[in-house]
Image 1 (cartoon, rainbow, N blue to C red):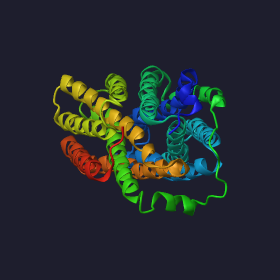
Image 2 (image 1 turned 30 degrees about the horizontal axis):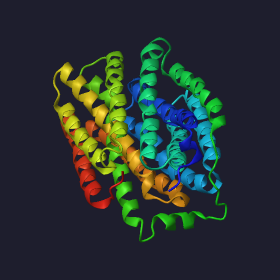
Image 3 (image 1 turned 180 degrees about the vertical axis):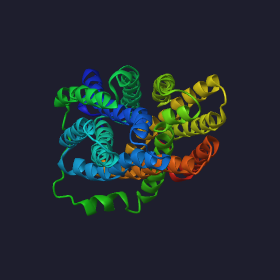
Amino acid sequence: MQDTLIQKNSKKGRKLLLVIGTAWLFDAMDVALLSFIMPLIKAEWSLTPAQVGYVSSVTSLGMVFGSILCGYMADKFGRKNVMIITLIVFSVCNLLLAFTTNVNQFMLVRFITGMGLGGELPVAATMLADNFKGKKQAKMLIMADSFWAIGWILAAVISNTITPLYGWRASVIVTFFVMMYAFVMRRHLPENYEKKEKTSLKEQFSGIFNHDVIGKTLALSFLWFVVMFSYYGMFLWLPSVLVLRGFSIIHSFQYTLLMSLAQLPGYYLAAWLMGKISHKNILTMYLIGTISSASVFSVASSEGMLLASGAFLSFFNLGAWGALIAFTPSHFKADIRGMGVGFSQSIGRIGATIGPYLIGMLIGMGFGIPVVFGMFVVALILGVIVLAVGTSETY
């Protein structure tokens, strides 16, 4: 298969990586900031653990619809326009969030925010996959996904500096203005994809469920479900879990920041391994590492063990996400790639919706952290099995 013009030009390739990487960066800032302000919202509106679970899950519910709709629109109308629309949606919603006065308003805005967030990442991944092939494609997808860690770290810095002085609303407004930077960056997005305006949504669905692809579609969808179920369930609740373990809100922010720094080497190692061993083996390694780290974190009793196991959990869980980002697009042809990536991630968003809700429900029922995290371990083990038997090797 011929390399694209962008792949041949390393300078243009780095520029495209920087521009599209902001999709992951700003999405991560949004998700991370939500996790940091959850203890504050819980106290301000006197929420029960179950209600906190609802608030955490409603964004992911919006992402379910956003992933499918925007994946289809990206195949039909072009990647660039859809990416810009998703950016506008969740940026404006972040500003509106600061003016909510009760939990119902908060949840409505977060649902709409989720539609923008859920639509952006599949389109961003598809755009990179269109412009790079083979090993280069996999590495670029993981490097773009590594911007997620930077966004999480920036959100932690904002939470540590602005939130204690001015409250969570000020932090949300700051993220809105930071996101405006992406409007400038995305003016430089290429649109070298041929739009298929006559393709219907039904035809796109048929493409990812024909007899040649359906097995891969189902397996990848389940893997995305497991990865997002575990990630959003564990990390949206991470500051709250640390508070439950006896840490102050500010200390929970600081510890989460330290744990988040471990995400970057997780991504970079996965990118370095691309081409040296199969994508399937890389993903398997990271899933097993996530299982081990979650198991230790759930029973950690000392501050040092919490920090160390939390850091390894960040390293492996986010590295698994990056490896899966690289693994997924290569299973779909270009004309159904947006729908394929969007659909599989939309199933993942269902997991992202269920995970935080289940934690809130189980904690509200009196179950301890080991039981809660044990649920994620079981799901991840099932993911390893499906990966082994339901997907193909890619390099």
